[in-house]
Image (cartoon, rainbow, N blue to C red; front, top):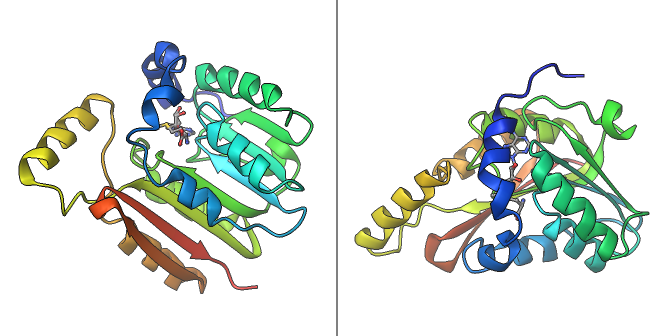
Length: 218
Ligand SMILES: C[S@@+](CC[C@H](N)C(=O)[O-])C[C@H]1O[C@@H](n2cnc3c(N)ncnc32)[C@H](O)[C@@H]1O
């Protein structure tokens, strides 16, 4: 329905080959994903959407941790979605999961999945890759059920790392089109104030990873 998704070809180029060894390598530095999933705590038979679902690794873990939930994922890379579809099928979660190609900055879940709202939405290491990440978070909050929550995990400000490691890491991340969002918590707080929601801010691994949670009123 959206004629042109320009960020998609870039993401396909980045992940065309990487997707084959993505999960094996990323487990060493996409930290905080498992604590984020452990904190989702959705209601029984609730719905969970991952924005920027990549290889489907997180959706599989969420599906195993929360057995009666429905799983949804969107991504702007068809290459990643191909891997995610296979991974979800191998995990035996195909009947509970639906994936769709979409741009997180302007997606219509009603058209994609036939539902407007989700009990939990999470974004794992994608806000640092999406130029319009603040719009994505705003849009995500607008698709929460009453009492629902948005969980975002990503690189933190790396504040407690030695200056040398920090600057080397920033250079390396830039190579992968990644920009840590040092104002993530402020943006989440402003969004929560505007929508009458509550926030939680978690700093993990000496500031390497951050988890931001925005909870909508019940
Ligand atoms: C670093 S990967 C993270 C994948 C997965 N969430 C994880 O934690 O392993 C970022 C993902 O976001 C996707 N992505 C980037 N920009 C996007 C956008 N505008 N809309 C939807 N997905 C996007 C990429 O294609 C990629 O799969």
